[in-house]
Length: 251
Length: 119
Image 1 (cartoon, rainbow over the protein chains, first blue to last red):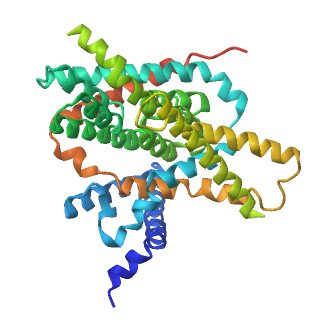
Image 2: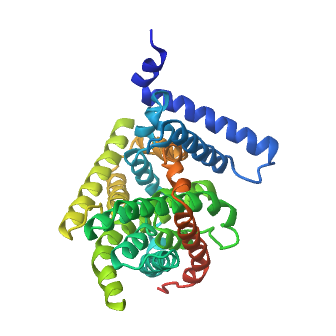
Image 3: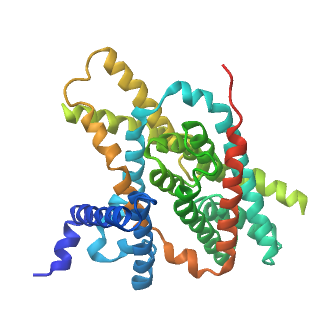
């Protein structure tokens, strides 16, 4: 009997068991070693990222630890379907008056988040010696999210090297947001629904925002998700068109 | 019944995502635009309506609550299946760009948060 294929066949259930163990270990580290200074959920997410890196080293694949047969259930449970389904389920705790009050700030943050990310990406691209509008726009788009980068790159016909760079940039952004949000939340007053909506609009990376807020305060998740959910779609709309043309006109 | 709550959640999710996909196609992008947001809105509105009709009985809400409690475990699974290796083996540019934008973002959050709509 092949044990690995047994676990692969029962992938989703296996992943439930492993995640429960990760959460247990993280909770113990948080209470026993760190005296709750860093929440257990933040440590669990960090352990997840370490596993992802290790999985990438072992297999060379794109799906982190989920590329190992034993962990294959992680593809489903950690995929966008489960993630979005859980985000939607948190909506029942949302307060409409608070949401409307933050509406204007949310929209401003969304627009600013898109423009600033694109500009920062272009500046870094220039600093690294890229001078053609297509490559710069692709790197700028990757600084939005790891989905906007390749969508823009293939629309503009950028080289596959540059597209890979843009995906990597988006992944770094998601990881940095995940790790540092819980550590810096108090300093930037990210402790209420209003600033969570602003945060979602400025960062935009759904994975980063979702994980960062989960590790900070679970009650803030639906507010951050509400603005972040528009970011990638709008980015895919604006980067290969308006932003690219504006960049070309400036060069 | 628990399954009715779960059914309502599933309906809201599917309708919202479908609308987001449709909106994406309409404006000509290969991405979902606001699907999760529309789904959340729909769930809240329908749940309010169900409550008024007194259809929310017994453990109806547990079918939804279970999934909001599963949120962190799912996020742990998500981080474990990220392409974390790519983030570090593509050289310095992604690390510089990806970190810089997050620092700027953190600085912007308290500034933009000052904007409040006064009713």
